[in-house]
Every structure is written in C-alpha cells, then in structure tokens.
Image 1 (cartoon, rainbow, N blue to C red):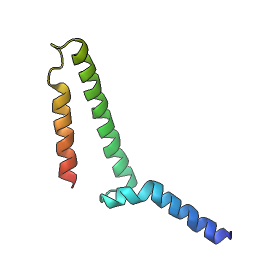
Image 2 (cartoon, rainbow, N blue to C red):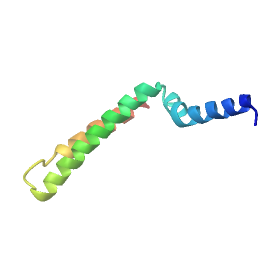
Image 3 (cartoon, rainbow, N blue to C red):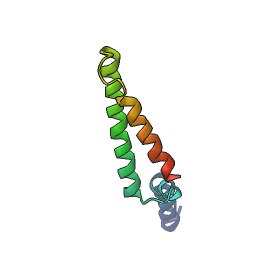
Image 4 (cartoon, helix red, strand yellow):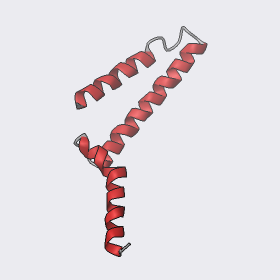
Length: 79
C-alpha cells in the first residue's frame, strides 16, 4: 500500500470514528463531546437518585424522573 493510500485510509477512519456522527447532527466534534458528557453526567445523577430512592423510598421520589424528562426534552429539541 502506498503512503498516499495509507493516509487516505487513516483520514477515512478518523472521519468515521470521530467526525461523521457529530456532523450528521450538525455539531462539531467538541460540541458533540460537550453535549454527550453533560448528558452522561445527568444520567449518572439520575441513576444515583434512583438508587437512593430504592433503598429509602421517601427520598428522591421524583428526582430521577424529572431529570429524565429534561434530558428527553433536550434530545427532542435537537431533532
């Protein structure tokens, strides 16, 4: 394989792994990363709230569901 074709293959792999999906939702790589990390953070918070609620039902009664509703609204607003 020539150097030029190896460079092209690497470029295509980089685009496939890091750029194609963010571009498909009209975001840059960093913008998509920021959104996904924020989403991940709030999913973690919702998960912890659900865990607390499972152990002590009087605590965090609606926390997880409120977070999930907000996250769902954010996803729907993007499309």
